[in-house]
Image (cartoon, rainbow, N blue to C red):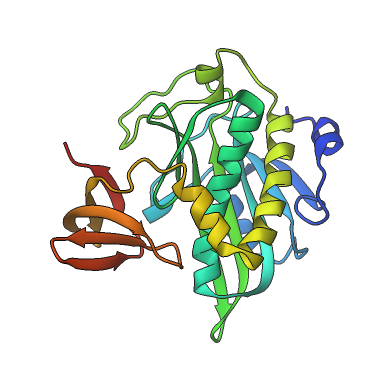
Length: 256
């Protein structure tokens, strides 16, 4: 079971996670924070041991064993622009990378748009969802799944998964990881609003695909080219011959 006291001792935030909700089972932490009004406070973190309908990007199922991993969502209530949401998506991956590096000295690789890799294997994923009123985004929910102490993975995967336990060779504290991550996330959140270019630069420093030949699947269409850079909004710039194209989302793979 998750020890809330051990988590709270290490939490050093002003907003994020100060309203903390823990549950054994839920439909989806993202859906709960996004659609319902039981948890109205900005910065609320909802952690569930098991999600009946946990999902990743493109509605892919996210399967996580209970009581060994972390599946949680963060509620942010403010007026957001689409650009700032994309930057925060990259920033969330960056906060995960910093946490893994600080606690376990891993070499972390970030894969556009929202995957966190250790030794080319996926250790965490991110899903941002929002609700709007007119042109303004009212609620933004940052959903995160981290493979912490899961000992093995069965099934077929687009990217082979791993866990902190498998890479670190021992079980680790979920409470320590979550508090450290939320501490980092709050700092990243502030930086993303004031210095978005720093988020972009720090993210790109951990992405080995930039400058490489890639394929990308967007809306069922496969495209090829060089992953040239990210633009100021965090979109992928794909170069093919003398032309460039901005890609807002898609599944990226290295060629060769």
